[in-house]
Structure formats: structure tokens, C-alpha cells
Length: 90
Image (cartoon, rainbow, N blue to C red; front, side, top):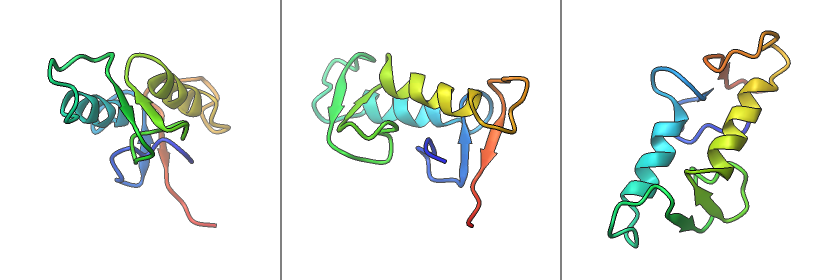
């Protein structure tokens, strides 16, 4: 499943060790983000670019995509934002 921004083998939207914090940190500490704006767009393909469009955006696309991945997981039948998707190999 996509969305494992911190590389821990789990996709987590809300809760401890979530992937949103990793996205925020990447944006906040990006070399070009001299004012620390959460609306800064980090260009290029990297681990925190959840939707793989070449732009990491904290206030929108990538965080929304992460939510939709967790919310739409077939085993998350109640749509809990705290549901954790654990990585598995086929």
C-alpha cells in the first residue's frame, strides 16, 4: 500500500508514528522553505510524495491521499482514521 512516508512498514494516518508527521517535517525542513511555511511545495519524487505527482504538499494533496488510502482500505470497514495498514509481501 502507498503512504508509508517514514519507511517503517506501516501506513498510518492518525496516531503514534503516523506518516503525516514525516510529510510535515520534510516540508518544514526543506532547504527552500526559509520561512517554514506548511503550504510550501517540495518538488521532486521522494518518499513523502504520497501521490507520486512530483510535488509534496502538506496542506492538501499528499495528506488527503494518505487519508483516502487508510479510509478506503478493504479491512478498515468502519473507516477509522487510526487504522494501521501493515506492509506485507505477496
